[in-house]
Length: 154
Image (cartoon, rainbow, N blue to C red; front, side, top):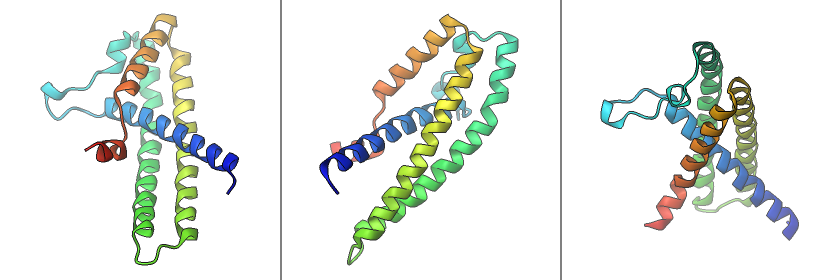
């Protein structure tokens, strides 16, 4: 693999992970809280959606969340397989590369789902609401790190 291809691959993987993190934030916000003290931000309330906007928002969410959960499940399964291949008695580079390619494809598909969802949400918001959502996502993204990053920091 030449350097250019490697860097392009790393960039694609980084973008997919970043959007995956964004998707995780959106999924977490949509889940009900186990208790009031840990209640996540209710995005429709935070944005001050009008009843018609709220209805459309609620129509957009279920299919997106269902697809996202299925995609995360597939990614998790392939990540586990990747780790098993890496730590096998005799690691096979072809198997490692195949799992990595599958994960990258799943992450790219997930990235496209998130982009489509955010564009759909953007379309139903007015300018101040779009600004609030953008700032919320950017602030959450700035606070997030992957589990792998957290694992290697300790």
